[in-house]
Amino acid sequence: MLYVIYGIDAPGSGPRRADARPAHLERLQALHREGRIAMVGPLPVIDAPSLEGGIAGSLIVAEFESLDAAKAWVAADPYTEAGVYASVDIRPFLRLTLS
Image (cartoon, rainbow, N blue to C red; front, side, top):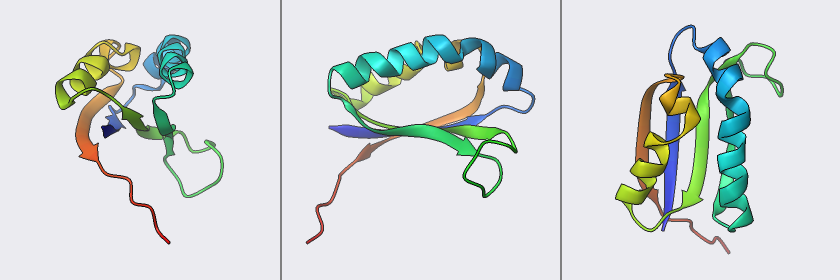
């Protein structure tokens, strides 16, 4: 099943985010290689097509065996371990096919 992982950055966590980013991206690449990523990306602070205003958080939509598996993946993520996120919401997600 797909799960939405919605992480909101803690104030002042930019340097921790930068330090943990390579390891975080490697974990996302591993999910991608397994065909489990539906969508992933940062949440810009401002309404712009770049990250010039900074990053407010992250959105990941990926396949996991269960909600518990998604929670375990987030708990072991470098951004979580580095204290980048002030909060993380994890929800099951049903993708609709529109015709």
